[in-house]
Amino acid sequence: MSTSSLARQQQAEPQAPTPAGFNLASVRAEFPILRAQVNGKPLAYLDNGASSQMPQPVIDRLIRYRTSEHANIHRGVHYLSETATAAYEGARRKVQKFINAGEEREVIYTRGTTDAVNLVMHGYGRAFIGEGDEIIISQLEHHSNIVPWQMLRDEKGCLLRVIPCNDAGELQLDEYEALFNDRTRLVAFTHVSNALGTVNPVKQMIEIAHRRGVPVLVDGAQAVPHLKIDVRDLDCDFYCFSGHKMFGPTGIGILYGKAALLERMRPYQGGGDMILSVSFEKTTYNVIPYKFEAGTPPIAAGIGLGAAVDYLEAIGMKHIAAWEHELLRYATEQVGRLEGVRIIGTAPHKAAVLSFTVQGVHPHDVGTVLNEEGVAVRTGHHCAQPVMQRFRVPATVRASFAFYNTFAEIDQLVSGLRRVRTMFG
Amino acid sequence: MDSKQLYQEVILDHNRKPRNWGKLVDPSHRAEGVNPLCGDHIWVTLKIDSGNIAELAFEGESCAICKASASMMTANVKGKSVAQAERMVREFREMATGKLDVAHQPNQLGRLAVFAGVKDLPSRVKCAILPWHTLHAAFSNQQSASTEGEADPMGLPAVKLNDD
Picture 1 (cartoon, rainbow over the protein chains, first blue to last red):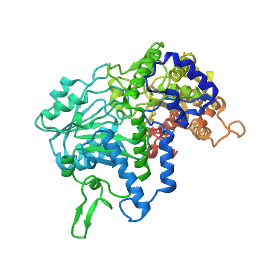
Picture 2: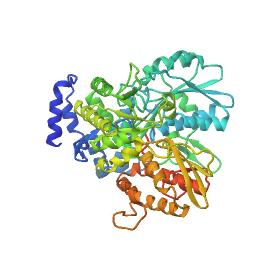
Picture 3: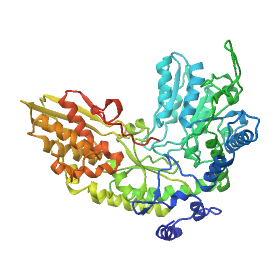
C-alpha cells in the first residue's frame, strides 16, 4: 500500500467504529489488489456487487492446486486424481456447512448464479410447469432471474406475475399474497436487490408460498457475501449464488436444492460424470448432486470457493454485517448530503449498496470522472432494467461495499462526486 | 488519460446547450440509434436536397459524450454533401477507435478532433460513435442503428460494457 493511502486510512480510523474482533487494517492487508493505484490515485474499489476481490489465502489455494494437486476428479485411481477429488468434494462440504444445508448432495456446483437459475428452469420448470400455469417473480429481479422464466413462458405458454415494489424499493407483501392462485407453480425472487440493496423479507415470503404448497427459488448472489445464510431456517426450496461475489473465483457457483425436489428433476446437461451406465438403448443417470454436474467442472474454482468460505468464516459473517452496516450508514449520509444527488432505494433494511443519480449528469459520465479519481463504481442499468423503469431513470451510479472498504474510500467517492458537480454544473 | 482531456470545455458546452436539438417535422431521412447496454438513445432527422444536407436535427437521452458528439456532428455536417458527410462518418469512427491520428494524418474533422481522447476509454467509444452510426443509417434509410454486434450498420466490432 502506498504511504498516502495508508495515512488516509489512519486518519479515518477515529470516525470508523469497527466492531470488536475485526481489524480492518489487517483484513485489507490480505487483499493485494487493494494496494493498487489507478490514474495515480489509490484504488477505491466500490464495485463489489459486480465482482469482489480475492484475499491472499484464496489466491494461494488456487496456486497450490495448480502447482501440485491437479488431475481430473472422480476418475483416476492415481494419487493426483484422488487429491483433486478430495479437495473438490471437501469444498462442497464447506459450502454445505456455510449455508447450513442438511446434506452434501443438496449442494450442486454450477458456473454461477445465472447457471443455477437456468438449471432449475430446465430441470424443474420444463418438467413440472405447463400451459396456463403461473410463476411469480418480483420487480427487483436481476435479468438472470427474469429471462430464464420468460424462455419457459415462451416454450410452455405459462404466465409470469410480478410482485411490485414501492418508492423505497420494498416489495409489497399484500400484493404478493394476492398474486397466488391455484395455477401458481413456482415463486422466484432475489434475497438482496443488486440494483438497490433492498433485503427482502425472504423467510416470510417463503412461508407465504409454502402455505399454498408452492416451492420457492431464492437468488442469493447479493446476499451471501453480506449475511449469514441458513437455508434450513429460511426453508427455501432452491438457493442460488456465485463464487466471485463472495471473494472466490469466477466460473463457479452453487445451487442448493432440497433433495426431494432435486431427485424428481430432469438432468440439465448430458455427458460424463452425470451417468451411472450408458448403452445405446438406455442410460441410467447418476444420483444427486452428480446428475446435474455433467463434464469436467472448474475444479480449481470449486476448491477456491471452499477457501473463500474458510476465509469468511474466520472473519465471521457477524463482523462483516456489522462493519458493512457502518459503511452503508456513513456513505448514505455523506453522499445523500450532496446537492443534486438522488439516492434510489431507501428501504430501511438494506445491504451495503448505494445506488444514486446526479442531477443533469448521465451515470456514465459520473463513472468516467470517478475513475479518474481512482474510484471504481458500476454505472448503468445493473442488468435490472425493470427496476430502472420503476424509478424512471435510464441508469444509476452504484457504489457497492465489502468488509474491506473504509470510510476514507467513501470520502474519496464524495470528493469525486463534488468534482463531477463542478465539471458539469 | 485524464478525463479533463476528454471532457474539454467545448464538449461540456455542447452537452449543456446542444445545437440543432429536436425533430424535423417533415424529414426526408431519419433514423433512431440505440446503445442497448448503456441506454444511450437518439433520433436523427434530415432533409436532403439534391444530395446536400439542407437541415438536420437530433434529440434523445444520453450521456454527455454522446450528446456533445451528436450536437457537434449536426453543426459540422449541415450544408455538406452526403458524400462529404459519409467521409466524416468514416473518419470520426477511425479516430475514435484509434485508427486515425488526427494530429498527423489528413482529415476533414476539424474541431471534432476534441473527441480523439475517447480512444483511450474503450467503454465510452460507442457513446461518441452512436450519433455518427445513426446519421449513416439515416442516409441509407435504415430505420435504426446500434453499436451492438449484428445491428451495427458499419461492421464495427461490438464494444460491450461489463455485466453483472
